[in-house]
Image (cartoon, rainbow, N blue to C red; front, top):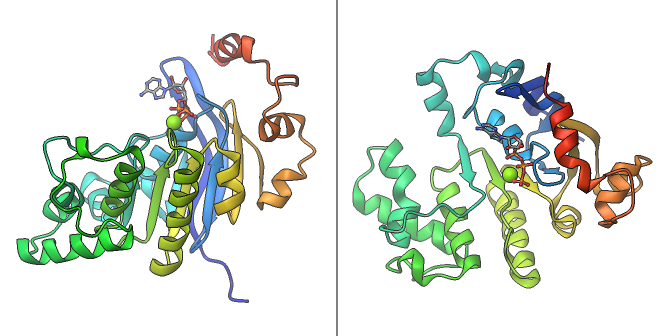
Length: 266
Ligand SMILES: Nc1ncnc2c1ncn2[C@@H]1O[C@H](COP(=O)(O)OP(=O)(O)OP(=O)(O)O)[C@@H](O)[C@H]1O
Ligand SMILES: [Mg+2]
């Protein structure tokens, strides 16, 4: 078996917002070509971790490496270049209401390349084909279902032929069948385009369907990393409570606010 190459390495990441510690020493290696899921409850820091990996925000301390290059010390120009190698699919589909489907998908190409509009049109058509939305170019976002919007978001995320695609809750708010369709699409795109995919979700069905490996985040810390099977067999009672969606257990939902305030440094 070929040696695994680390695509993204997160090392001892700490992030404070105001006085509040949201990431508390996160370390993770994500391998090239894998589909890696970041799972965990609401507010545990998933989106914040993802935004550090894309270079969108800077850590309080710790490092993020992309193929050995330190993202946290890059200047804006270097970061901008790097971002062309990343595709992003946001928590809400984040389509621009005043642009049709084709222009939404083509936006990264307009922003980051000098390609002729005709070529952009062709690329957009191909990307829409990959997400099963060929022929939908002229529709406006308000004419699309939630699932279709997510797919347009996926097409936009792969517009620049990225190496890594980051997905933040790609299936949130979708019915179980559409959720499965979007999960399958994420896997298909990963395999067809040889992508590294990093997916944030709190949907356990999705974790089992798509993850090569997953990390469970809780109160800004990684509790467990492994294959879905390894996560399922975790001895950690917090992981067990989360994956089974149990009310009883060490996660005290009524006290979550209080727990959060315990993170505040006095
Ligand atoms: N820019 C910010 N400024 C201040 N606090 C922030 C900021 N971004 C996130 N936070 C706080 O950090 C904590 C973690 O937020 P984050 O969005 O990473 O959680 P999450 O795990 O993605 O949650 P969800 O599943 O609800 O999307 C929250 O308490 C949030 O209020
Ligand atoms: Mg989030």
